[in-house]
View 1 (tube, rainbow, N blue to C red):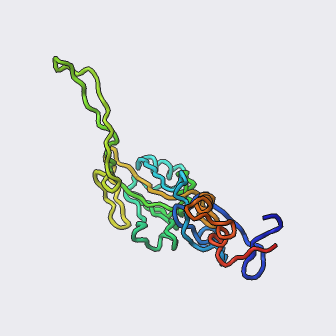
View 2: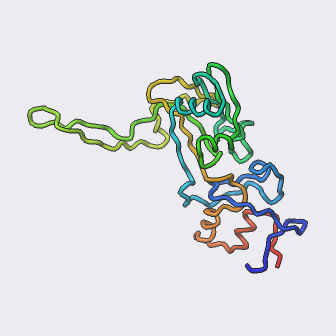
View 3: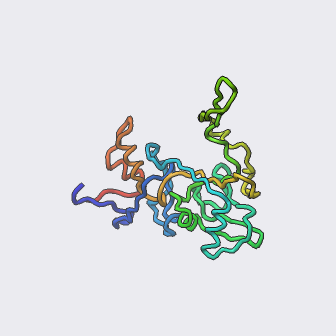
Length: 233
């Protein structure tokens, strides 16, 4: 590849941004960088082997409340969070599904925060996520062990295997409005995908294309992630 560079339709060297892993779909340059590059489009990614392809964060409403207050957002007791779903996206998401903004509501008011700001506050891998509020099912069941006299002498932990779609005991996951009740063990759950801004060439996606059943050349990989460009020697 020595002496080669990628050029756009006008023959100029491209702004070759890259990302670690997009979570299955890259982001446009306009949404990620606020710059409309013709070759930074949303395309299929092949990054399923990435350790960040799918991730999850569970935190308490109290933690979010304290974090918002520390950053100057005085909302009172948290009452709700509003964000459309990836399955039924609204205007609060980019065309690829990443969060443009999320609204937190409390007893004293509400605040609209960008997906990028949420990434910074909660150290999220990306802004490509869904939000759910509920009480998660326990991951283990503690069973008492008794001796022959019926006396408890210990406990045994039995892992509970629950299908992913039935993992929540209950949930108020209704459209874009998620009520926060403040009940015991309640969690705000972020179901996310990918790591980074998601625009341009995906490192894990390129690895997947190069090492798949039908390995792609570096030229094919570049053409996929930067459509409309060509190599110049």
